[in-house]
Image (cartoon, rainbow, N blue to C red):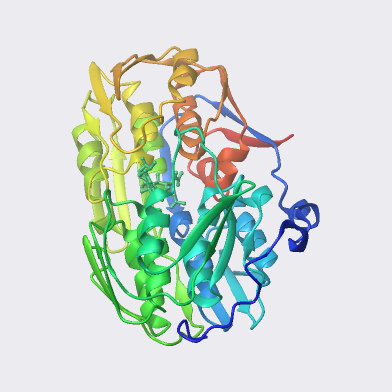
Length: 453
Ligand code: EPU
C-alpha cells in the first residue's frame, strides 16, 4: 500500500465504541503464573542452542504490518512476549500460524488489506514493545490508536522521542482516555536528531520512514544489532535503508513493500544468561547459534572476571574454573555493555573475591532486584545509580520475586551458587523472554525446575 495515497480506514471521530472488545482478544493471552525452583549446582557441562532474539522478533513481527501478503519469520523464540505480540497483531487483523521446524519456531504472518489500527491497553500494559505498531500503522493506514504504556519496574519509561520523531514525519497525536491516537495525511521524510539513542524510537521511526515520501535521516540512532536486523528485513521487503547499526541511518521512502522470509538474529541476552550461570557454577559450555561480534563488551567484562571465552564460527566456547574476580561494570547504549546484562553480571559479582562497582546508565529505576539478592545474603547496596557489591563465597537460597525478565533470570542463576533452595516467584517475567530456560539449564547439569501455578 502506498503511504502517499492511502485512504484512512476510520474517521477522525474514531471512538471507543468501535474498539474490539478487549476481553475477547485478551483471553487467550492471559499470563500464566509460574515459579522457578533452583538448587546449588555442580560445574556445568555441555552445549546450548541459543534462540532468536526476543527484542528483534517482536519488532520484525510489527514490521509485517508494512506489506500485504504472507511473511515468514524463522528462528522466532517460543516465549510469552511473542504470544502477546501475536495477540496485538491478531487484534489488528493479521493472522498468525506457528510451526515447529528443527527445534525452532517459524511464524507465518498473513497481512490482508483490512486492518483495525488499534493496540488495546489490555495487551500493551503486559508488553511495552506493542508500541512498535505505531510507526507501521501510521505509514500504511494513516491512523493508529495505541494505549499509552504506563511506567514499569525500570521507572517512568516515556515514549516522547517516538512521538516527536513521528510528528517530524508528519503525524499528529492526541492523548485521550489513556490512548494515543495518531493520524497523518501522509508521512514525509525529514531529518530527525534523537536526544538519546533510544532503541524503540529508532525502530518506530525506521518502520515509519520506509514508506514516507522522500528521504529521512535519523541522527544519533541506536546501534543495537536488533536495529540492523530490522533494517535488513525492511531492505529485503524492498525498502532503502543505509547505515543501520551506526548512529546515522538514511532512508529513502518507497511506494510499497512486499512480504518476505527472514531469520531472526540470535539472542545476545540469552548468551549472557548462560555465561553468567557458568561464572557462578563453573564448568565448560559451548553455545551454538550465536553472533560473537555482538558480544564484545560482555566477553571483555566476563574475561576480567576470570572466564575464558573463545568464538568458534557461530559458536562460543567458554570455561570457568575459579571463583570470579571482582570487576567494575557499567552499562551504555550499544556497543557499550547492554543494560539487560547488568543484573546477570551482578549475580556473578555477588560471588566475587572482593568489592565490585556496577553502574546503570540507561534506565533510572532498574535496581528493583537488589533487595531480592540481599534476601539471599548478597553484600549489595545501592548508591545513587551505582551498586556496591561485596562478594561472598556462597549465597543462601530463599523465596524471592522476579521483578522483570532479566533480573528474574539473574535470580535463577544466582540460585545455582546458593545453599538450599531458591524459589523465584513471579516466574512469568522469565517466561516472557526465555524459551525453556529450565530445560536448557537442566541439560547442562543445573538443577532447575519450573512449576506452573
Ligand atoms: N527513553 C525516553 N524517551 C523515549 C524512549 C526512551 O526517555 O521516547 C529513555 C528510556 O526511559 C530509557 C532510555 O531512553 O531510559 C533507553 O530506552 P530505549 O528506548 O532504548 O529502550 P526500549 O526500546 O524501551 C529496548 C529493549 C529493552 C532494553 C532497552 C535498552 C525491547 C522490547 N526492549 O527497550 O529490553 O533494555 O532497549 O537496550 O526491545 C528486555 O529485553 O528485558 C528489555 C527490557
